[in-house]
Amino acid sequence: MNADASGPRSSRGKSVLFCAECRFESALSDGWLVVSDGDERTVVCPECGHVADHRSERAAPTPQHAD
Image 1 (cartoon, rainbow, N blue to C red):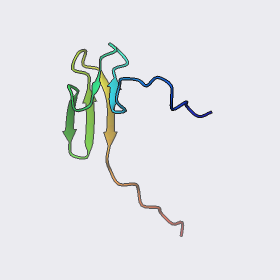
Image 2 (cartoon, helix red, strand yellow; image 1 turned 30 degrees about the vertical axis):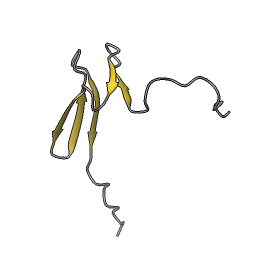
Image 3 (cartoon, rainbow, N blue to C red; image 1 turned 90 degrees about the vertical axis):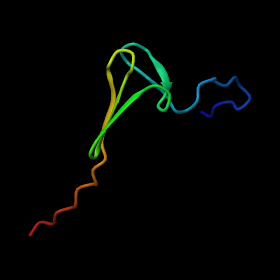
């Protein structure tokens, strides 16, 4: 089903993150602690310290062929 374009719109932007522990909410650029270490990135809630996201930006593994 498609959303009704004439209906009420949320005042939140698409880039708002929510903390699952304390319900803190804010855009990534407005308050979240972002820790980068090499090819890894961790997003931490500034209110309670909960890790909201942890990602590795490594390249996809190279397929191996059976001999």
